[in-house]
Image (tube, rainbow, N blue to C red; front, side, top):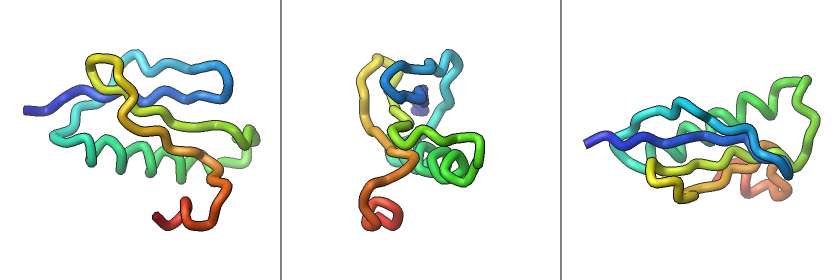
Length: 78
């Protein structure tokens, strides 16, 4: 059964995702957060190096945090 996941943007404050998206697994939601981070990383308007995508499940629990600008090379390819 699909579950709803929310993708907040956080940089000290938070921009809340009010809609969310449904995924069959938490892995699908995490992969989506990685895709969002890659797109934001390549957007020249995004300059905040502390920006992260925070994945919340439908119960409001954080299940993953994906940095938009990883500090380690391994984070880009892991």
